[in-house]
Amino acid sequence: MLLSNRLPDSFDPNPLALLLDQLKRDSAPFFDLTLSNPTVCGFDYPEAEILGALGDHGALRYDPDPKGSAKARAAVAEMHGHGLRAEQIQLTSSTSEAYSLLFKLLATPLDCVIAPSPSYPLLEWLARLEGLECVKVPANWHEGWSLDFDAIEAACGPRTKAILVVSPNNPTGQYLTRAEWSGLLELAAKKGLPLIIDEVFAPYPIERQAEALGTILDGPEPEAPVFLLSGLSKVALLPQMKLGWIAMLGPAMEASEPLAFIADQYLSVSAATACAAPRLLAIAPGLQKMAIERVKGNIATLDTLLKGHTHLGRRPVHGGWSALLRLPDIEDDEACALRLLSDHRVLVYPGRFFDIQKNGFLAISLLPEPGTFKAAVGALLEGLS
Image 1: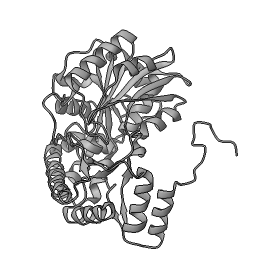
Image 2: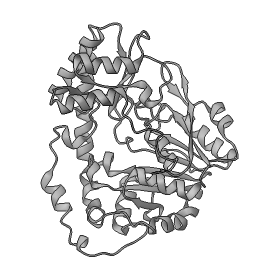
Image 3: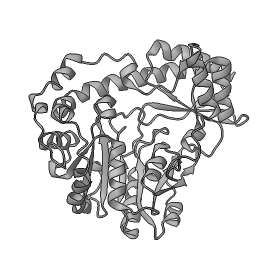
Image 4: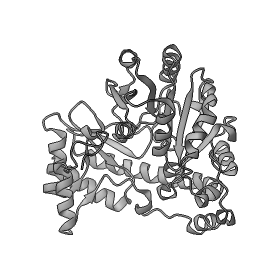
């Protein structure tokens, strides 16, 4: 059967995935330092409140709205603050769907979007599945990453339809700085391009620096169209609830009706989740605090264990749930990740998974239960000794 060229050329698993599948088939124990699903990380969720929110009688009636429930949109706007209004919000079933709708809105197949790297590989596939090319522009590196505006501008061409930025980045954890945000707005206005800003991890500042912008809503009113993305998956540690949203800022409001038209063809947002959204967003700050405490505690454990390994280090975790470990540049990071799983039963992501061009990085999750995390890091460091 002939398949679309939007799909991968091969579905054969890579060596790391092959080994992982074999361990699972053999029921062999291993430590998973890629675990980022909060619902299986031992958090004490307020179950009664969550289940009570899902019991809203409004879910018994089908009352479709292409933009999403007005009450849910109002709750999202209130959560973000900064004078955001319900009419600026478009609900989606997830942040991934938000990208998909925006790509349909802004681009035609064979067009392209620009995404600074390193970043999460999902962006490339979401673009490709819409028939678009995701042009990855490496960021500047100097003991940290910063946007390379000359490279981004050079990558802009007639087919470029948007610039994507995740802040804080996954996995580097770096927020946009005020200077970078000003630079992006200036470049977008100069090139006549919209900006898509993904802030799913914004509620999790960990070691954020003073110049970092906690949210672009703290910045100036944009003159270019800006689409701000977020969702319950990270905001409320509830990935299974499947609710995301797009906030339209500045001239992006001109796209409100066309965007609603696209969403109307799918009507993908669950009534139960939309009805529950105001109550789920109300409990989100408590859930965020719980996750921040977990992440900070695991960072403290990681730093303590790293003291005996002077050849290793970690990058600052400005925000989010991941840490990047810096290794001596003597072993390919993919080969290192494979060896760690094979010989020491520890699963980590190689930096190349996130398109980190420099060798010597491993990405680990900071969400696992503290006791498990400590044991996993111990096994990891043994493998890196």
